[in-house]
Length: 281
Image (cartoon, rainbow, N blue to C red; front, top):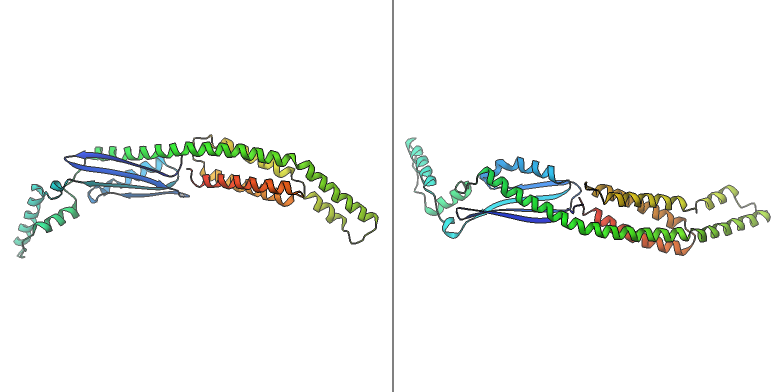
């Protein structure tokens, strides 16, 4: 089980220039990928997206690669860049155009906009990004273990709660029989206003055994699901809706306050499970 939230970063130092990759993920119903790369590294976005698609199932994942250099390096302009500027100025003059002198500040702006001075080999860039994403996956797994432990606790609590409701089913049935006897007495008194078929249909609707069986079945599936190594978030969310539906029906059918009160407690546990379902992959 993996959480959808996580954060990681990896760094690489090359020629006094620090390249850094920050990866973070947040909750999302689907897999959303946002990749930010320096201009001269934009061509690598495709394989980064493919790698994320293969290793993550859900979550809003942001990958940001950037570099920083010491002040001395930030103010340096390489000989290759200067030669390139001169070549272009000469070519423009050759076509009869005047070229105004370029200031040092303007050269820095041009260099930064081109981002050609800071070059990273493909293999080094891949290693940098993959290290960050592997760490991101591990942080999600670590948080997922905590979530799994809490889900196991909630399953135990829900089993105890539904068992308590099952135990009170006999008391609820007694209330049903009391109502049935009242209807029989009313029939003996020949009260024509009593609709027999409707009366028995209403009494039949107070039986909560089917809902209890279905709830336990859903709970078994949830317990099996959280042991799975696959993405479980969407299925877990579905099962919480089904358990919520069964609990609502139990509460509406129950004739005694004790079952209704226990149903409220059961709903609170289901809500906690639902919150976890929104946070796991």
